Image 1 (tube, rainbow, N blue to C red):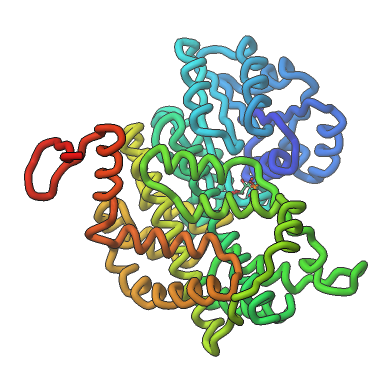
Image 2: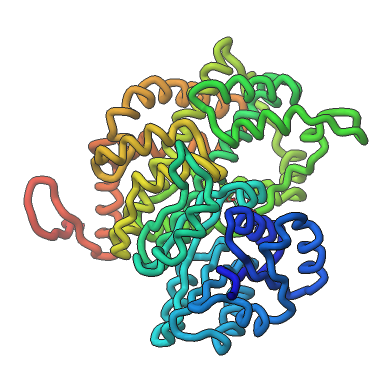
Length: 466
Ligand code: 6PG
């Protein structure tokens, strides 16, 4: 009898997913373009090797699977996925399914589905979060496919996913690109949260002059409170790590240039396209780009000093920072969910927002204590698809916003950059204004381009007497 599932791509994520699937009692046929990697993988599989079938070609992989076949692709997002899909296609039969577990752009998932139209071969877009440990021991899995396809893939995907109170953190979130869209926004929130945490680190380092070790202790304390989250926990951990070569904290010798592979930018762009801007994500992506402009940064620092900047640090700064981060994180999630809700409506995905919050509670990178409240809020229904309207969050924001305001004010005065926290506050102040200033923009647009405007006191379309 053939293996239950095939898996292509034995990089760290693919190898760990294969071991996870095998450990859950399924048989897996594996294939990697470079065959040496397959051999090394099989050696490392120890007692799980009995569940795994190494194959040396796509033909052999396909032949070793039980029909109808399911094949997981865990290859770099983009062109590699297309080339694997096209190479597999002639070897497959109607009823077979490919499952893309990479960080695909959901637009590409939709395009691949239309390419497969009429072939009878299925394509499941599954966003997998949790890094290498998650892949091995239980990720959060965001799936986009038909209900019938989900019934086929779910026994495996639900079994390997993380569990929160015994409930699997794997769910079907809609058809076609829904899973990859939600995974993209997950990553956008990940970018925003990481940026805000690094801004808090920067304020303590440059504003208060604290050492990495002292800052790490603050993060460790925060992890026991309202900010409890995987990203806060690992921040405390990395800040405590000593480097032998420099005989100091390792963070102090890590170059301050952040890498990125695209999901943050996609989140920001998709949210903009939907008219639901995720400004904290935009700020986080921009901050990573600025971080990589090292030569310009040092040239400008020679020209512009912090002259005019005040010192940073009121007595209650660390407590205020904790609350400011809470407010920033809530804004980032609110923006992310808002974009997901808008995409769901546009693509008719019917994304169950409560399920999204539920499956983000374990396994994924942005898991945090707040997600329990978010799941509860969405279970009860949320007005305007915006979490901040919910009674669970109003009291938290009411306490946290003054702290965010204080931190943003102090940082601006001190010349210390906190773009994501500032963006969160600017967005919040904009979204809570009953009367904004876009009336003037409408007047300007009509003045130079006859674009017309609506009036508050009469219905219809108008032009000004310019
Ligand atoms: C996850 C992560 C993961 C992502 C990395 C790196 O959910 O496990 O989001 O999918 O690839 O975080 O992303 P960047 O290289 O863009 O920072």
